Amino acid sequence: MAFELPALPYATDALEPHIDKQTMEIHHDKHHQAYVTNLNKALEGKPEATHSIDDIVKNISKFPAPVRNNGGGHYNHSLFWEVMGHGKGGEPTGELAEAIKSAFGSFADFKTKFAEAGATRFGSGWAWLSVGADHKLVVSSTPNQDNPLMDIAEVKGTPILGMDVWEHAYYLKYQNKRPDYIAAFWNVVNWDAVAERFKKAQA
Ligand code: MN3
Picture 1 (tube, rainbow, N blue to C red):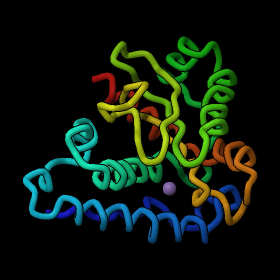
Picture 2 (cartoon, rainbow, N blue to C red; picture 1 turned 90 degrees about the horizontal axis):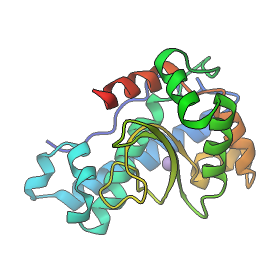
Picture 3 (cartoon, protein in one colour; picture 1 turned 135 degrees about the vertical axis):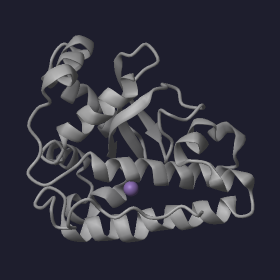
């Protein structure tokens, strides 16, 4: 069973005006599709082709670069679409809010740290909020299509929020102004979806 492009959980214009329709169309239909297509090509005829994307990512050091790049791309974008939504934003509540406060001091301090992780990632990559092995929340960034679930990651954990800072995620609307895109990202974060991932990561 080959990997497939998951459908967006909302319309391509659902994140307007923060993330524009054309960016969403190209990002999902072209970029994410290419990661899926190239991952399937890289795993063709190999027994690992039947493994889950989570298992592949967790053991990424055993795979060649095309699997790392495209498997990471597939995992990362699948998460990315799910942690955003129409009319979202605001602040997390409940246990996730408490965990953020305990790890970073306040929600505002967390936002600053996460935004910095995205803004200072040189070239292409991602900013992450993850649940570490110690069950504590941690902010990190990764280059290219790496992520904290990978066994080669500098800061390891189970990602519960990811922000794509590749230029293809924002260039049409924000051009070179990555910080403006990062500021707008907070308006589309689906904290219910992040809280759900937080719960699962702790189980
Ligand atoms: Mn992308």
